[in-house]
Image 1 (cartoon, rainbow, N blue to C red):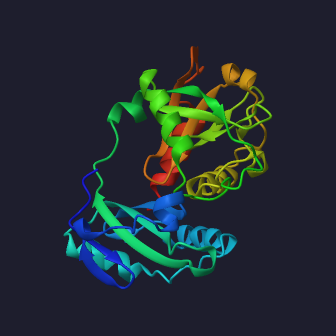
Image 2 (image 1 turned 60 degrees about the vertical axis):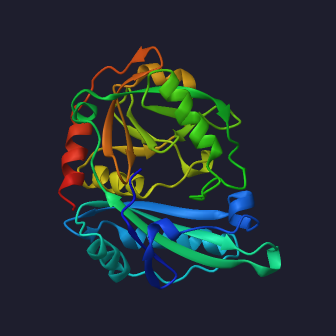
Image 3 (image 1 turned 90 degrees about the vertical axis):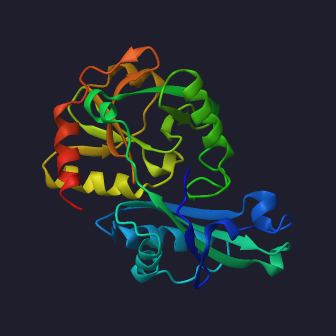
Length: 276
């Protein structure tokens, strides 16, 4: 990734190339960190308040204080790099090398947002089911944590299989989420379903917005567990995150999705685009 040359750390603009972590800090040793990724449209960060709330909630759970972050900080970083449409990465790390001496350090870095291939949105993407499982009771579930090895390995698994994203399962075998996305599907009875948070997944910011949009549009939507055997019966499917927005799915493993993109996917993608 080509990060822009100027970032922000703990109250000041700094050269991105100077950003480092002490090798023996909790952040470097154990991946003790939280992060949020969002987009800016025309220089305005989209849904920043929701990302900040999620980061603060995670920081409280980890007993790591979260510094205040305002839109003006992101505006300053964008201005310093002459960017308008960008991807923003906010990273909160634990400095210090002992549980009783952890100190929060917050970095904001940006890069020009170049988008995803047009054919993803036109034709859909392929998913595979990763071989690894993550239990719903795992200490990192529900946190946007920098302890990201499971997701990285799942994405590599997908790419080696010629797919664009991998689905993860919990210890009960239920499909929970993608490595970097949340999963939605229109099932046989016409309901738009997405796995419930209780099954062990990150409550995505875009996921929550899509659920609200569906209900506002009169689409029957539900948080419902998805078993692996359900994947072959989807009428439509799509994945979401803050950078991709809404991307239709055309195939899961060797099973094609019936319609891609389907009517519900198109309607929600259009409604989402009207929000920013």
